[in-house]
Amino acid sequence: MPIPTFIIYNVQGISIIVDAEVGRPFEFYCPIEECGQEIKMQGVIIKTSMEEFKRILNVTPKVFSELEISSPFIFKGKINGKGTKLPAESIENFTKRFMKEVFVITK
Image (cartoon, rainbow, N blue to C red; front, side, top):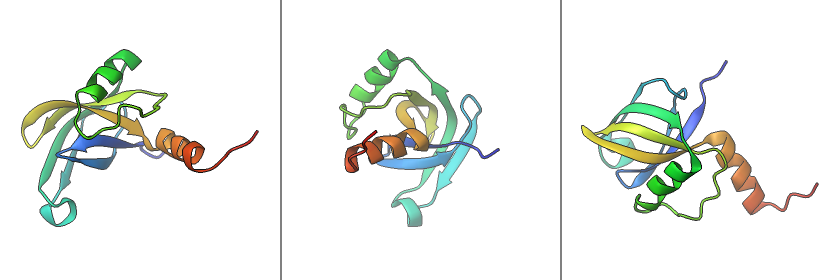
């Protein structure tokens, strides 16, 4: 079974795609050559309430508060040694949202 993929929004000002299982600790590293800056992440993706997700979304710079995410997740951990919580979205949810917004889907 493949490991789920998530987008974590506003990691040092950029969105990062990681392979991580919900509730299981993971580590991620991106060198300067690939991300424009060195990024070291350790933490966990957790499913959260919509209220907690919106609270984190609203205090996270450079993330659109109008994102219509139906399955709320957050990243809780450290980025370059600093503790943080950031909004996250499954690639599956992102793809569905993208398809709905870009293409007119009829039933």
